[in-house]
Length: 245
Figure 1: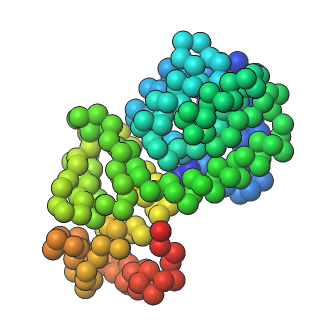
Figure 2: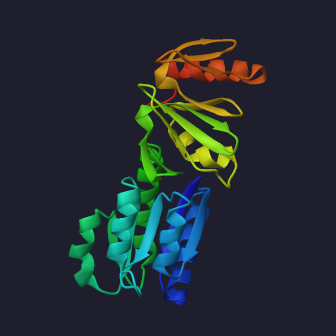
């Protein structure tokens, strides 16, 4: 699911941008989660636990400026779509240090915000799974989707296996496995052949009734109840009926 974070220390401005964002989503029939933050520290802490695709950030905030917050977000998530909203046009040049999608001035113009959200949603949907950020015992780690062979859920942790055989294991997750892996399904290469697995179809070497064989001779089982649907999805992918990245 698309996740949007809005941060502004002025409650009225925060409500206004949030209301307009929700109106945009409703008009365009887009399913997304919109989270509001009145302080940059609260958003920064949330980013350590969750991945957001779109950020709408006030530039001038207490403690941590929007620019500092944007830099931290960019270190964790190179694919995030960052939009700055400010009363001060003079900060626009500084903002481009974090490669934002756009810079809007307050009071926010509805049509201008909708135009920016069009671009942000399109970019987020086309590239949301180009990388995923996970929490490990060593800290946050950004993983390129291209390198993922498969993903496995076991004992409340998620194991990512990569081309070449390397692995990364997350810390215990608080959400369900399906919620954790949801961003991967924005990338049509990924499929879930089993309740506990996700496979990157571009790295499949063989499929039979028991499961997928991946590069490196890694085997992932296919649920017998899902086999027909999984087989058809894989055939369509190989025939080019499902867009690849």
